[in-house]
Image 1: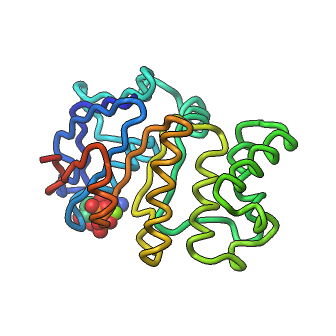
Image 2: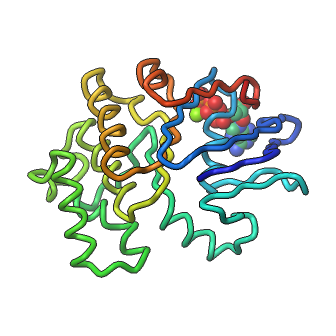
Length: 219
Ligand SMILES: Nc1ncnc2c1ncn2[C@@H]1O[C@H](COP(=O)(O)OP(=O)(O)OP(=O)(O)O)[C@@H](O)[C@H]1O
Ligand SMILES: [Mg+2]
């Protein structure tokens, strides 16, 4: 599902990613742990094509058998929107829009008809136990509810891959636990592949595979 080879990344003198190689199967749940500054977010952003590895003739990133570095900018943006869902530490919902509207945005970018997008959004909201909050804005929702809305937004286009960076970092332990259970429920229900960067030991250990990063390498 995701194959990364010889991934390097530099910020000036800093060798942030040092020869990362990774193969992730469909429907696997992978956790990535490691000290602050180890390069976890950088790697996740590169896997999600939001950032790019250093140009290197040996490096390759294949997602769904597509060599993403061969896509042009517009093709890549469309590919990302369709195949990859992102969940961030801070939900990054748009404050002016309701839960329902926030969830629908990636679908609109994907040119999905409004009625179709809204129907799917409502299904997701009810799956997440949030249907009754659909017309509320993020500021009117609890942290755990906001994060579940962000999960629904990540799922609206039925991406095969979900990338999450500290998804429960800002939740109390009960909401965090619920969110973690939800990831496994989603995998069971929809078969998605998850790559989750986390400092949460429970979540890291629940994963099928736990990868540890040290100084830009997977050890
Ligand atoms: N845009 C940037 N410019 C320069 N250095 C950067 C940039 N982004 C990240 N870094 C550096 O790259 C290293 C890896 O950062 P990264 O955000 O990937 O770490 P992380 O493992 O996600 O850490 P944390 O657990 O604190 O989120 C750090 O030393 C960081 O300071
Ligand atoms: Mg980080």
